Length: 78
Image 1 (cartoon, rainbow, N blue to C red):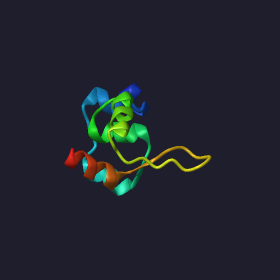
Image 2 (cartoon, helix red, strand yellow):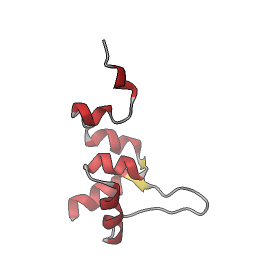
Image 3 (cartoon, helix red, strand yellow):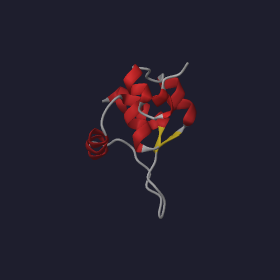
């Protein structure tokens, strides 16, 4: 039997069930929330990392996105 709140996105945080890095690398394109989950930080921290050089792609008239491989490489080198 699954708990009632199992369908909520934050359920993983309550159960400490972090996804492995391999999961994010297979996605290839990430939103900011997924980058937060990948490296275990807040949205504000991602903003600070972008100011420090974290690669971000900002297409015209579309939401910004991150490439998982670039995020992984940047985190490893910083």
